[in-house]
Image 1 (spheres, rainbow, N blue to C red):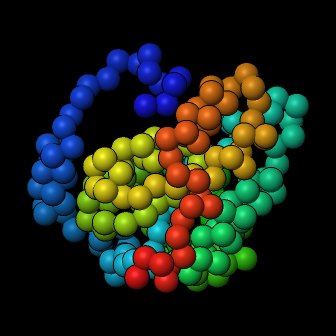
Image 2: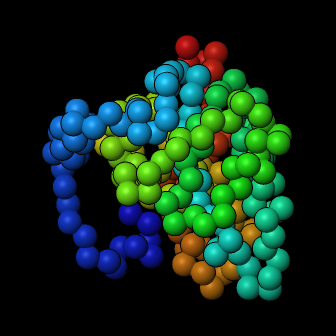
Length: 193
């Protein structure tokens, strides 16, 4: 668990128990229909778990939408250059998604999961079964591998120089970098086929 979050009270639920609950709920709901997904992800597909970096940025006001777009654009370019199709999942509390800004560069190679905010990501992933995911510092990078065997990758190394040292995220980034594989370690599609 990331360092700043270790002080919060938490409950432990075994992965097997959570998977069984998610499977039961998933059977009752047509999750793929709720997400607007007509196809299931394959080996060429990867889930990008987005999060707003706006609140993490330096206190000097150096944040700009262009900076956030460029951060994600660089990561998406690296992933797509390795042969993957990317499915974008907005953060539930993200007010101003940059998805549309990114489609200018990537067109239909970037797909969006139309997520109902109240629908937990775990339920969606239990139905869709992405083999790989990528993100910045999302807690999903820690528990999706344990819950579903999803291989997780991060590009938080690109975020570290942009974050204010007074923000909690500044402490999370080194923890993420130590425990989650770097995006540079993501194999090309040919290597996983």
